[in-house]
Image 1 (cartoon, rainbow, N blue to C red):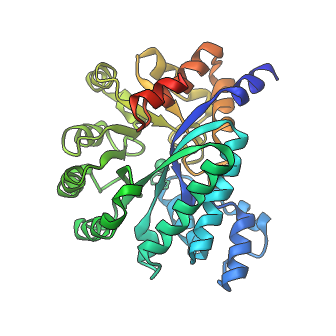
Image 2 (cartoon, helix red, strand yellow):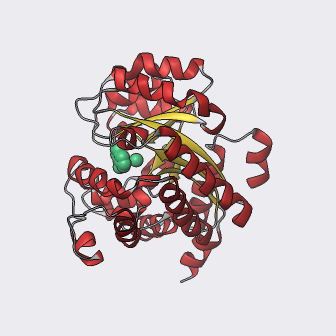
Length: 326
Ligand code: ES4
Ligand code: ZN
């Protein structure tokens, strides 16, 4: 249709995408074979059939298991390259990619293996497609502060290739303040800061992310809408929210796409963006997320253009590079 063509042609930045969540079942099978790793599925169809979740934790259990096929530098490079092929097809000009080093180092895969593979894929994508990208190192919030500090120490030789730190995994019971000192140390190393907050957690977790972690960008943030004074603050500060419509549907953050608050967020003056989160698990890449939200909420070209412009305004790029995309 007309709108689908408009979405496809819009240049966009993707600001919320977990690289381990872009592992498609076909690549999972290929890597399982290459590395002789057993997986608990006998077909690509069986893998897809297992992707039925009713909350964040159900998803995370399957997602961490899928990542077990990632073993070598080549695996991480292939994973990143597969994502960038899809991103290029969706007219993504810039991507800021989350990775979860603890998911790998806790299995005995070296931090350097992960970094060498992912950065090789990023450099290939720049050469092939002109896509620029950055890495955001996420701490797993269900693990403790000391484990996060150990991960930050492993990152120190790689700071020239890491733009920011983030916080992901199980939100409930793991408030942002648990990582206050880690984020303070990351800031002292010159890293920007983001955090998942208000996906399942309450508005108070969003306030903690702002006030204690001093975040530069808010991942999800949906439940901020329950607190009018918080919404007013996010709008006043022009905080970028990285919203993920298909993720919200699959993880039951919204009951139906028809109830997604994306247009309400725009109407409140929030700087919202649309992103794919874990595209291999949630049923689509960034254009699919634009399309699903646009159809369900009747977004027109003006709203879609605002969402795409917001993605560049919220990017961790120098002002002149941002201006060149607007
Ligand atoms: C995630 Cl959707 C989501 N939330 C929290 N942590 C995550 N890790 C990967 N996807
Ligand atoms: Zn996420």
